[in-house]
Image (cartoon, rainbow, N blue to C red; front, side, top):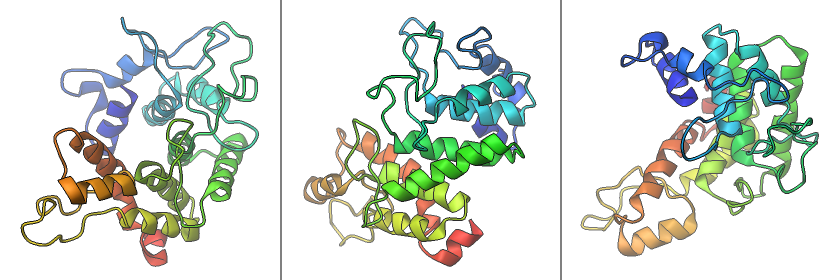
Length: 259
């Protein structure tokens, strides 16, 4: 719901009248209003609650731009998900009745670093244009952590289950770094991502119809060159390309400064 709201806002649509739905009201209904999880978004489904920091980041951005009364509490809860090291974790504290819902207050396993969550949180906080010192401090700390964890070849890994260098995480990091004006590391990351993009393969190649697609990692690109993009693998390619595409606008310092 948060992603849909931000999309509608970015497209210049009317989020309170979008496809017959009031996206602002729908999102507000997912925001907890009682301590200790005030401001936290919560899934209401028969499958359980899988809301996380990615969704919280989008919710903060969407609710703030919609001038919602829930924006402040949502922002405060998001800021609690940043550990003192500067990164944002992906998952909230599992126990909703735990007095301490912060990143530092949870166990090390539950508060593992996550590149994707950090990058998305930084971008959402930047989009607020907030004069608050705590928001600016959070952005600075997140960007500093991204810089410190970037590999020498420009790439980034993701979270605990996606530690290897990959286009998804690297492109998101590039996007966040560029948005903050950190063009040198952003360009390095973007160039690494560009090495996973399909460029003008030979006529008759298995990849001839897939020019522009971006592989998740080098293993995925190697497999595609040998077997093409198959029914079993194309979903990964679709997701990766959508998430990594913005990095293609960051291949030079001049382009980054215009970003």
